[in-house]
Length: 259
Image (cartoon, rainbow, N blue to C red):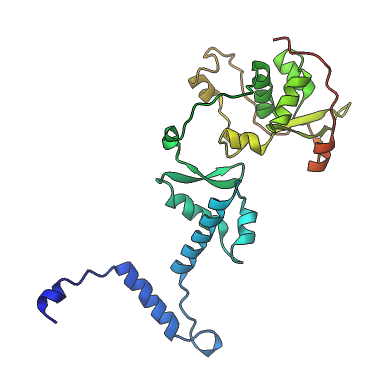
């Protein structure tokens, strides 16, 4: 072979060479009681787990939780480590792995959303009363209808809560352990999914709402936003199961919002 031919040989990739060396050692060394343990090709194993998780998340029609991924991946797989690796892998890509309500999905990178934006007419928009009611439930849950009316200062109509229930943005949580056993309300995973929130803790705080112009900068010094989902003394409740909530019927007063 001539010197020119040898000079044209491509440079070796050190990572590829290292993996080849590990494979060779694993094939030639004994394992178990017969000899020293073989070399476990962690690089190959982790890469295969990532490929499997990618396929599952890509094909899923809804976000997947850790338990669902664990049931599909090989036994003993560290699913949280795989999720962390995929999150890092796609951190600067056109799609990203995002957590929504404790579950995971691939979604378009936020800075590229304009590429997919389309103009369409919304056949049904929330009224101001519905938006206020939804906000109160999100920030004050678990909350009763009477508490919603007390905060808003007006009665809640049958149509307002019915609409939010039909959109699956709110749900019946259970019954408050207080006189009358009133029904309590809370938001759903569909609400978190629509607004891109990983949890209730990601709801905007006072400073965020002020910056967005949604709160007056001249608020009382003792003004505060409650911690969503926090159960205060006297607010303990007996939760409904999914079947109980689905079959539960609420008789609303047939009144309209005054605003």
